[in-house]
Each structure stands twice: as structure tokens, then as C-alpha cells.
Image (cartoon, rainbow, N blue to C red; front, side, top):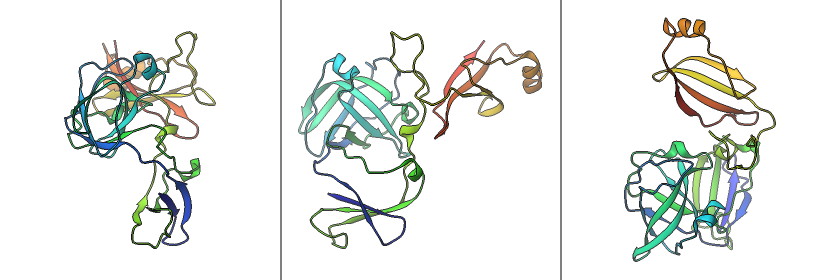
Length: 255
């Protein structure tokens, strides 16, 4: 398959050649949210594939990156997951267990639930990434894709108009990685910067910036925001990227 792109309705440029079918399918069960940064042994995801197969992998291989897949929620966002066990339960149908959830900063795509019928894609070597730059993020392009032996005017080609990519792979994570032997986990950014929102329900009362992993929220500030010092308050912490902006937040209640 060939993938072409244009900012207008003409002058399409070849951006990718896809030579291997992806393993794709749909979920057959509702998929509920689960824990992050540890194994989700409570959820089972049943998936029916259009073709191909899924296989199990040892935990150590999954922790090393094996059995990576994505599930799309009703809003169009993708949760990246991993699984250790793929049990064949019917024709092209598997139960996936031993899950790692919200990988690569996609925990916000979890829902209660992502309803059955959601799209599923195995993220293996058959996936081809479209050639794009950071400057292309957020820009709406017109796309055409179809059998590469034919020109883009052939009826076998399909179109996707005014579609943009959000570049979430550039978004800072809401928590550190797995550098257990290190005193500090690498940031993955050129410089260290954070923003902390002080919350009152869904309302932001104050935003505090910091270049270190600590802030002070004074009693005077609490009185200004809430009328009196608080016994506890809720914060949302964002890492800041020079190229992307705010990352995915992590929320906590501070006594």
C-alpha cells in the first residue's frame, strides 16, 4: 500500500510504503480502566482479529517491550497496552490477560469502560510510521492510500481529508520510567520544568511553576485561593516540554 499526503487537493507526495498487513481487529468485551505502573490482573480483553495471530510472552519479554498493542476509545484516543497471555477461545478470537496499561503516557485514554467494538491494533514490525516532522504536528493534511502499483487517481484508492496528527509521542510522561538502579530517572527533555495546578473540583485556583521537583504552596496563598489554610488540597502536576508544552498530568491529594 502507498500513502500520499497533500496540504491541498492536488500535488500529493508519497509519504510511506506499507508492505506488510497489520494485525488488527475489534474488541468483544468492555474494557475497564486498570492500574498503571504495575500488572493489571483484573481485566480480560477479548479481541477478534481480521487476520493474523497473537501469541503469549514471558513477563520479562513484555517488560522489555514485547506484545505491544493499542485500543481506541470512543473519543478517538488510543491506549497502548501490553499483554503476557493470549488464549485462543474461538476462530481468530483471543482473551488477553496479564496486562500493562496506559503505556507511553496513554493512561488518559482509559475509560469505564471502552465499549466492546473498539478498534485493536498490534504494534509490531508490520506497522509503518508516516514520514513527518515536528512542524507537521497539528496541521490538517489530505491523505490518499491504496495499492502501490496504481496511481492515486485509481478507484482502489481511499481518501482521508483534513486529518491531523497530535504528536502525542512527544508529550512528556506523567511519571518517571523504569530506571530502578538510578538515583534520578532521566527527564527525556532538554531542561527540567513543571507546572502545578491547585484544584478546587474541576476549577484551577492557581498555577505554580518550578524548575525543580518541589514547590511551596504557602498558607497565605491557600487563604487567598480558598479563604483559609486547607487541611488538604488536590494538585495536578505537569512536566513541561519545550517542543510540546504540557505533558499528561498526574493528580494527587496533598494533606
